[in-house]
Image 1: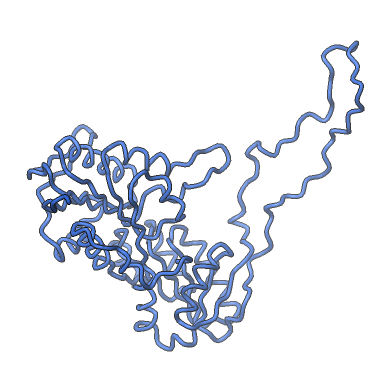
Image 2 (image 1 turned 180 degrees about the vertical axis):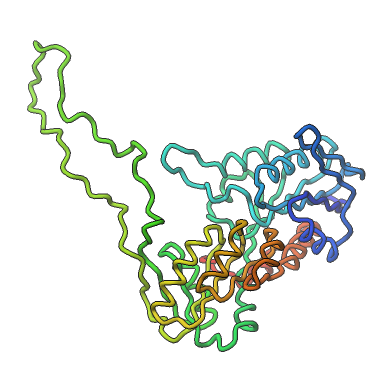
Length: 360
């Protein structure tokens, strides 16, 4: 049996506050300087990491390209310095939203996984991936932790009269997540379906363009023995056209709690809050694991019907929190610290998933 190696904690520049919270529970951070010179990222590790288990703490933020590049260089620096294992702690994995083929793009999260693997990463600790299938992009162990127990604890202890609440799925694809949380809290659910005019995506991507309506043979002398059908297309009805935004379920006189894995488009949540207020909800909460709050998010939240936005500290949002009193934070450094400790000590990770359902 292999002997246990020494643990080394390194941190990138994406979220130093979270790295300090984790380090305070385990051990101090090792010496690692990350800086830019001539617009190029440079990494200098001050401590010896040969034969050691290196845990690199780096999450996604408003500058995902810099975050990924820093992480790649740190992984490669550890690999070339003969680290025994390189475990990346990435609470929010950048580019995880691009996990499906859309139009003429590509699956960027697959590319990120390949680059991290090539750079030397041997294990990934992350939290609430946008799609669970992203774990299959990595040719290594992936521990996808869940923040649902922390958010449920917040509902039970921080929301007065939460028994009069209803869990809201902002779209039908989030219904399973909402149902899982509602069952544990013994609450009802409601689903918002349809979309507002601003959310309608353009279909002018060329994929639905019909071919020429007339088939012209290259040589008039060539005659087909088959009778070709009429190639003229009837007027096309857009299959993706949705009904106006509405709520399925009773929210009148109740507290509405919208649950999501991430908050990126704050205006979409504001429109959902408007619909819930029109249907009689007297208080509206938005809860998510990752708070990807843009610079104008505090202004939009302040001017909306949302009473409180609750996110974890997987993504830095201290500036937005100062600008808007409605933004609240749930600390998940305890969960990440315990995951690091268990992996380093070669203990089972199942304890961290004891209250997790398949839909979380």
